[in-house]
Length: 154
Image (cartoon, helix red, strand yellow):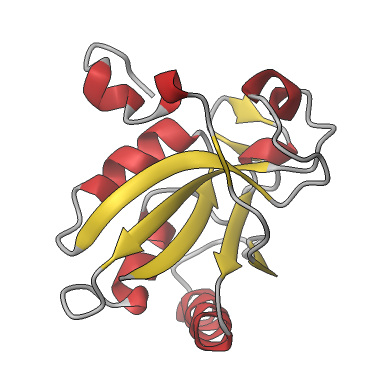
């Protein structure tokens, strides 16, 4: 299995989108990119820890490629919105790709460049592309939240 980590706003909807992708074996929501060790949801929500809400994915590269996961990532959020997605505002909701190896970094940067050059977006991409650091799993009630609470809209 291979891993990938994406931040694209509130992790509930992002996780739900990736769980539908054939070849994605597991998902976990959590926090990455900040300075505080083992942060809580409440701490991340202050915007002062530097963490993003992310979805950490394990996938089978024989069934789905990293490029295909990037295609999903670009489609499920607005990569031109700085520190916000829809009604969610703050650095914890920023658009960010955390790469786990040099190949992912190269592929992610090329993918962002292709999307920007395609003319499909009216504004510049603000997505950060960063080396993955420690992943802190979010509290259990956040895991597969929309599957557990189908009445809840994102």
